[in-house]
Image 1 (cartoon, rainbow, N blue to C red):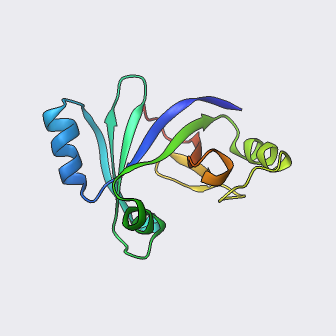
Image 2: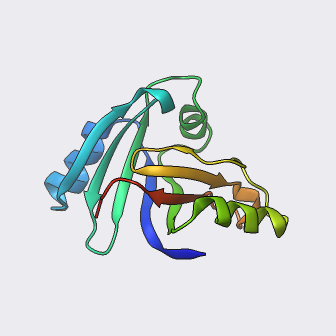
Length: 136
């Protein structure tokens, strides 16, 4: 079902501050930065060699990302796994009784996404991604 880890999502207070550390100090290359108003976040992706790290900073104080940041602080938000067929993957997870946040996929930054509830995976939120736009 899962083909590989696509990225690790890290929630931050400020994309600028995160890039000052990860790009400017640690030397990782910035791949993309954009505002995603429909999700209430600004995101930036850096090249981590065999995957990427996505930084998410909330724009909307009522968003899930803002609530996560307020309750847990900065840090790991999710692990994203690539899948070839997100519909089939969700159906199989549902068949197995896995608790899902999204039972149907929605449009994400790089394709269709859906999230598995952290309570289903030892406290780790899992994102499924069926890519529709090339991104290393």
